Length: 451
Length: 88
Image (cartoon, rainbow over all chains, first blue to last red; front, top):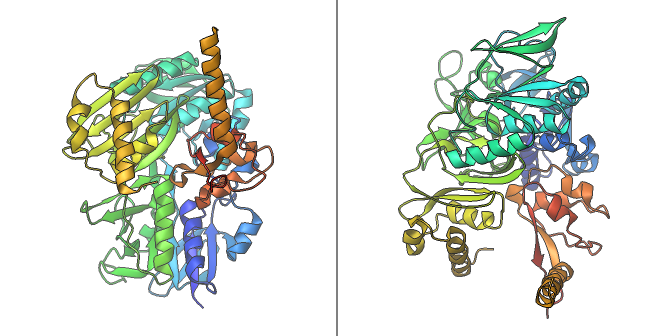
């Protein structure tokens, strides 16, 4: 009987367990997790914080589901993997044997470097426990400062507004999420935030968090302005939780390096033979830096969809199948200042965003790539559609507001549809972009038998 | 509202009802993050989220096709699609 160990109870770990069970009915699957709340919808925390969904609703799996998968769960932290012995060592010293192991430890918020980050009232949004803390603090707080960029920073801004806390949003540069959105899109989001009563401070950098009796009381900016606040929320990016893999002699770059079958390698040197494949140790999800043979490089995504797919693929491989993970056009749907926004493929704004250090949660590195393409766009009220037109296909798109075209555009980008027949129309200014794409999609769908 | 607009509005409403009656809720799994808002708002307690996880249409005969889950989903996962059960 094969013994499977999965470290991490996020969507990658759960998905791997489902895949293993679909192939191996008798294997022994154990899920180890260090977040006491187990498996819940991490992206759902944003909606919990805006009072749209109660806490207990975030648990997507009930006892019946774990029972159905015959999945054993163990709340424990892992200190080290001993690949040569096929064992893991827990923090309490216990050793657990395995035949196949999956590292799905996810990612953690990058802490701010300013003095005072240890004060009560300085928060991040990684876990359900973090969300509970934010709600508790919000009951007594008047003002908050939010620092950072990307999706999580806005989730924090909107959460605090929903809890009736006055929000000051610090941006280091001159606009929001400059390496993914173009200027118009940034301004749409900022305008909506201002309408909600959020005070945006441009070119403003946090220097220090002040406190009294261990509680945050305000901040000082680099240009020496003082602001009173009881909450400082930080979302400057996430880092793969790769310490376990590093301590265990695995090949680690920015994340845990895996090949297209999600298999890890040794780092080389030390007690382990140099740089060899570890056929029984896999990694998936936010912690993994997955090699893409088509692109010739290893990329990090911090997205629910790829984490689920990677977990599933790893699970199949762990249970004896041979399945390569094929990265599709990265894609996320999110809400930016109340505006549903779909981001697909490469849409790159500027090369850098001063508000984010690493990749941020809910983001793919691919989005930041500045494609060799022409941007075509259409604005109608608060709705916006921007498609990046390559030589023969669409390389990326952003759909803000009305999502009618989002599915069509997603398929056209993901399946690299040949858009030659409409290319000239798309890049011609003042043409009805939406109508052209909708018409093309209807024909394309019929020809290719897509859903 | 003049008579023409009234007729137009009635036609739109009629069309909407047709969709609702003949339709079923279909998820696009890749958009879903399992937040559970859909299941939470279902007036008769269908676990719509599970359908979204499995990528299966909501075929529950009790589904009222009221559209609560479709409109509440913050990520546009769900849509009405004409079902084939009324067709020959």
